[in-house]
Image (cartoon, rainbow, N blue to C red; front, side, top):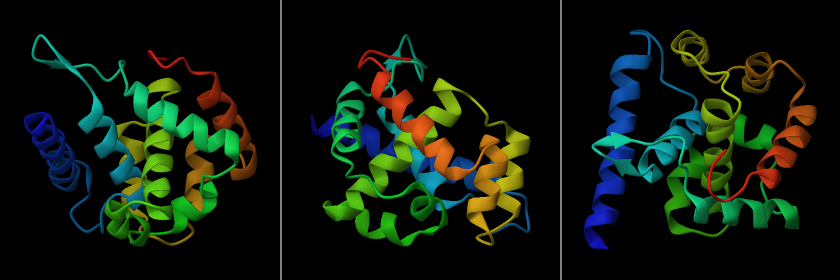
Amino acid sequence: RPRASFDARLAHEAWHAYADQRLRPPTAPGLPAWLDEGLAQVIESAPVEANEVRLDLFDRERLGRLQDLLQKGAIPPIAEIVSGGQEPFISGHAGGEQARAYLTAWGLALALAIVRPVLSPARIAQLTAAGDDDAVARFEALVGMPIDRFARTWRDRMNKLGRRGP
């Protein structure tokens, strides 16, 4: 198990390095924290089969934890996650309330990259170039609807996912 934990951490941090070098325009500050941390978790938790990362086989245990929080109404508001910057994720390694931010970011990234993909390199570059100004409006442009409507749709979609994949 220590090897699996190490590999997951390495994949997570490798995502950050990749995103910073390959997806961030040269003058941009970087991916929004929610997207960067969410995609890093999607990568860290994806199984490897025949030396290929299987993004379509997402983490069932993580999905179960997210579904439990969604059913209890215990996740942070999506507007708070997308506009919150790095802070919830810096302290999120400790657990508690901040760990919910990580789990929410994972669910958002999973939905936007795998379940109902809207992300592309060009769209990621647009999000990256914009910085932290008006993060909610940029998110709404990405998903094509007001954030409150997206939140309801996303919650329903995540709750309906089987714990085996999309």
